[in-house]
Image (cartoon, rainbow, N blue to C red; front, side, top):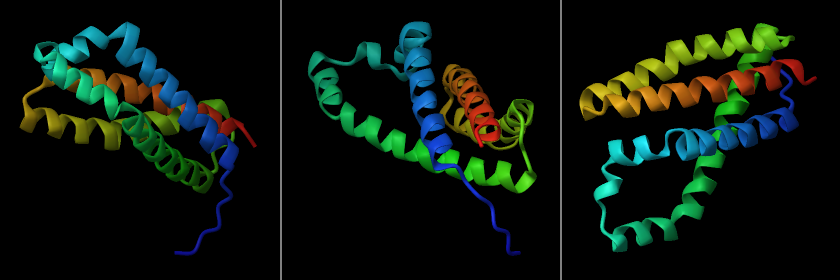
Amino acid sequence: MTMTVSVNLWAVLASAVVSMIIGSIWYGPLFGKMFLKAMGMHEWSEEKKAGMKKGMMLTYIWQFIASLVMFYVFAWMMGALGAKTAMDGVQGAFWVWLGFVVPVKFGEALWGGKMKLFWLGIGNMLLALVAGGIILAAWK
């Protein structure tokens, strides 16, 4: 199958930035305390917390790179499907979320036993994908 699809790299970049902003709000002021508790981080020693903070910038960089990859692939898919409107982006985001994100996160929750992390993760990803879907489909 040969298919040429044009990907707007600025829209991919904007989607990745917006997803990082959504994640920082989601896992910060909205649900940060719940996330820390579900991860068991509230019981960590001050030394362990300080060690994690040292590596946080690198973690953000890797997450941003992962977001760029995700939104590039999503942009390609949206282009291949002919998405042109914000509503096309919302619909595409919903189906990607339901078909790929939810099952993967659910499997992690089943095997890891942390259902709070499942709900937090799928909620954040739904918002990030919808925002990215709108940007990717509407920005030509």
